Structures are given as C-alpha cells and as structure tokens.
Image (cartoon, rainbow, N blue to C red; front, side, top):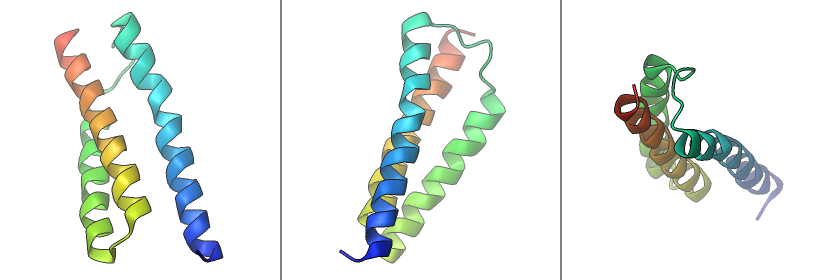
Length: 84
C-alpha cells in the first residue's frame, strides 16, 4: 500500500466511524426531532453515488465506507419516519 491508499483507508474509517454514534443514540433514545429528513435523504443519495464511483475506480475503501455510511443514513431516515 502506498501513502495515498493508506490515507484513503484512514479517511474512510474515520468518516464512517464518526457517523455511528448518531445512529446509536437515535436508535436508543428514539428521539428524531433534531434530525433533518431532507439532509439525511440528500446525504444518502450522495453516499450512494460515492459507492457507484468507488466501483468505477475499483476502490475498496470508497466502496466499503460508503456502503456502511449509506446503511447508517438509511437507518436514520427509517427511524425519523417511524418516530416522527
């Protein structure tokens, strides 16, 4: 692995992991008042596009990180709708 691949893997880990506490907190408290449905829907669309781009580049860090983040965003969207 070269420097930029390592940088990409670290960036993928940090950005993906940083998103998980919000999912956990929302799951546990069922409090979705502060969540913006528009923002998370836009975010989900964006990370889904990153997944497609990752496949185009054949970049495992981009693919894996954005699949996990897309699932997390979709989870928050589902919770927002369920507990609205």
